[in-house]
Amino acid sequence: MSADKRKFKFVEGKEPVFVYTGLLLVYILILILIAFVFINLQDKIWLEMKFDSEKAFNSVYMTLDDGKKSVENAMADAKISAVGLYSATGKAVELFGSAPETLQVSRLAGARQSGTDSTTGIYFFVESSDDIEYLRLSRFTSIPGASFIYDPNLAQSFLNYPEVIYVRFDGSAYFKKITQARILSIASAVLMTVVLYYAFSIYNANRRYRNALLKHENLVSLGAAARTLTHEIKNPLSAMTIQMVLLHKMLGKEYEQDLDLMDHEIERLTNLTNRVSEFIKDPVGNPQKLDLVPFLTGISSLFPNPVKLNFNGMEHAVVMFDEVRARSVFENLIKNAIESYSNGEPDVEVELSRVKKKKIEIEIRDRGDGLPKEMTETLFDPFFTTKTKGSGIGLSISRQFVVAAEGKLSLESRNGGGTIARVVLPEVEESL
Image 1: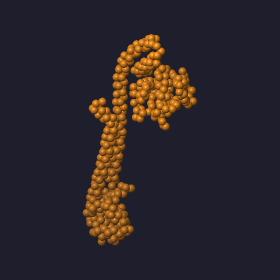
Image 2: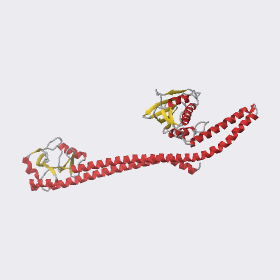
Image 3: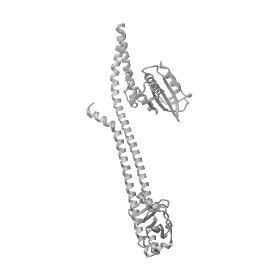
C-alpha cells in the first residue's frame, strides 16, 4: 500500500473523532458566548436601574425644601412609592408614602461591609414585590441592633440635614428584563443542544449511508468479477473431474492417496464456485411457509456433535422463507458454532422464541473461542474469514438470504465467552 493510500485510510478512520471533537468545541464555545452575553446584558440592566434610581432620588431630593405637595408630585412623576428621611441618631425625620417607620441599622451596615452598595448609595432588591429600595447615606454611623423610630417633633430640626434618605420605587420592569434574558439564554442553550444532537444524527446517518453505498458498490463490482471468475473456473473443473475418473482407472493403488487428495481439492473448488454463484444470484428464491420447529430439529440431527434444542414450549413457529436458502443459513450458523471450538467438546444450543409481536428469534449459542475484537461487522464481508480453512463466503450469503426474507442476522459476543448468532424473522399464520 502506498504512503498516500495509508494516509487516506488513517484520515478516513479518524474522521468521526475529528467531526465529533469539532462539533463539541463549537457547542462549548457557543455556550460560553451565550453566558457572556447574558452576564453583560444583566450588568447593563442593573446599570440602567442604578441610573434610574439615582435620577429618581435627585428628582425627589431637589423638592424636599419645597413642601410635602412638591415631594408627592415628584414621587408620582418618578413612580416612587415611598420616601423617608432619617436622622443620624436613628429617628425618622419625615415620611412620605409607604416609607417604613423603622429601619434596621445592622441591615444598612451589613450591606456596606459586604460591598453591595455603590459609591453613593445602597440597593436592596425586594423580589417578593419586585420593588427596589435605595438608600443614600452621608455621615452615617453604624449602631448595630438599633431601630429608628418615627418622631414627628424632630421633623423640622432635621429636615435640612438628613443622614439617611430612603427611596422605594417599582423595579418590576428591571426584574422582567432579567427574567427575559435568563429565559432567552436557557432557550438558546437548549436550542444549541438540539442543533448539536441533529448535527450528530445527520452526520451518523450520512456515514451509514456512505458505508452502505460503498458496500453496495463493492458488491456490484464483486458480483461482476465473481460471475466471470466462476464461469472461467467451472469449465476447467469439469475437465479435471473427467480426467480424474480416467486416472483412477489407469493408475494403480499406490497412487490412490494422491488421487483422493486431488479429488478433495477439486470438490472444494467446485463447492466454492457454487457458493459464489449462490451469493450473486437472486437471494429471495421461492419463499414458502416454513415451520421452524421441525425444520431446526431435522437440521440439528445432521451434525455428528449433539446440538441442544430449546423451543420454549412452542409447537409451531411459521415464517416465509425459501427452504433451500433457510437450510443454507442455519446449517452454516450451526457449523460455525461447532467449529468455533479450538479445544474441548463443542457445546452448541439453538433456542427459539417470540420476542415481539409477529417476530420469531432464533439464537445459535456456543462457548467457543468467541469473535475477534472490533470485527463483528467485518465478519459479514465476502471472503473475510478467521479460519485456516474456509472461503469466508458463508456468513455473507446467510445475511443476504435472511435480509431477503425481511429478517435480520447479527453476531455478538456471549457473556462468559463464546458467540451468539441471532436471526429475527417475521412470523406468519401457523396454518400450513
